Length: 408
Image (tube, rainbow, N blue to C red; front, side, top):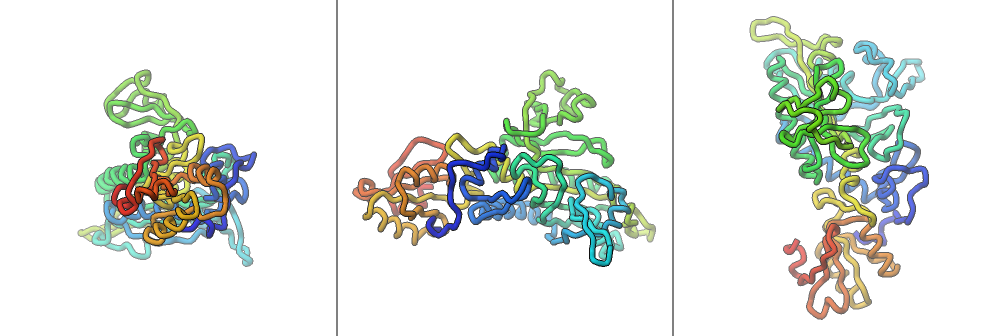
């Protein structure tokens, strides 16, 4: 993409009321626009990142967890929440039809997916069933000061699994942990992300969160170095040691962290209110056991930035960067050659062809944070080369122009 064709502009300063580093950088670089507290528009470069994250998630959902993608509505009938006893939860946004029927905006989709599955589940032969979506959620958060880490409208991948018994649910639940690890490794935060024991609420003794260590975190976790597992601060007094190996609390490493995903064994919490049942091989009706598995897409994007950034701007992992290269030309002759390079590698390159100073181009390249900055000048052209620098390094190399793609 030619940078002159981007309608978005970079700025030196973020909105004064924006406290979170992830939102400050994304707004300054023109990746998102703040509409109100907890609500953001995703602009061309930001949307490219989101789509790449979604595709990494889809790959694991489709291939590892063998789930089918669907898309459910954001408007939900309030009576479904009355069936499950969740009509008074404090984060619900409420609205009404002209007829007076009460609706809510979906803060999750258990109350929709269970009636949906009930239309298609009859026999043990129909189980197990795994469905997921990537869909907007709406939560009336009292506190929305963490940028895209905690929004009032946000995109989430939510997967729901339906099983004939707890044993089958347990097997799939463990499989989901592996899929989540793969996702976080692929987006560039695998080393900083830990499976964390959390309170299971009304569902079970424990649920599991995936927490990414960063000083910008809202949560506190205690990490077991032996197991690479952690315990959330909210349950550490109930389990004052590592649940896996027994390491005592005082020997666990205390860190601030961001929750980037969670998984729950719902069991019969939502299937029973809707009388979701199946007929076994002997003709007897049996209850259905459920699991749910969430990843906030924007939240994950924000967590990646909190881990991968410096005083100059963002540092995108190659797997989710909008473009692999940021191309800058110095001098008129170099601009002609840069245009030739761009024409051959258009899909991989953001070409800064703007009529601004070289210093501004360099500063914007650091702010925007593509994995590799490529500079072509009359000096480098003497050797048919470009100067390439990794965003996370100060080392610069000369690389032959025809070897640029293969070098990386």
